[in-house]
Length: 172
Image 1 (cartoon, one colour):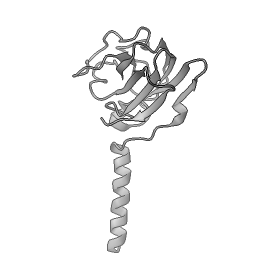
Image 2: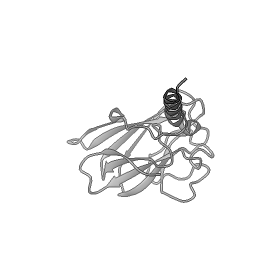
Image 3: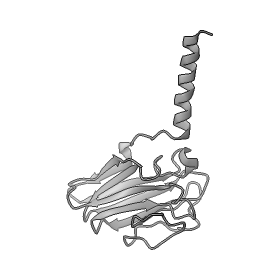
Image 4: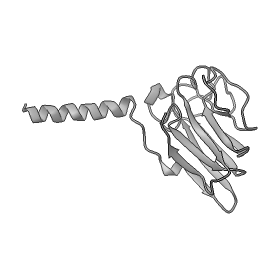
């Protein structure tokens, strides 16, 4: 094998490994839909979408790499689905360092799934319905003991300045 072919194989292996181990995924626009006139949004919150972080991720993102921006006062519907082999849950909490090791009170009423500590099994679903208020920064956190602290969280920003919802890549 020539040196060029060896280099090409090494680059391909490196790219494949980085994707499997931890490369940041892309945002899928189908996760978010909204009706601006009705001030409503629906977000698909997918636990364990990829094997990234051992499955401890939301929509393939970990450690706050994704921010969901919601205009203040909008009716929010988060469709939670567990795609992982491990049980998972979700709740919106106030940002804190370090993150809790187990469920805490939600920062926004009704912004949580059922079975917070036990988690929902593979294929399990639940819907969180809440009004996006008050304005501020929050964390969407897996409350199964140890999962959130291990990186299973993304950001939620409720913004008085936003005119429509958005998903943003954010540095971890």
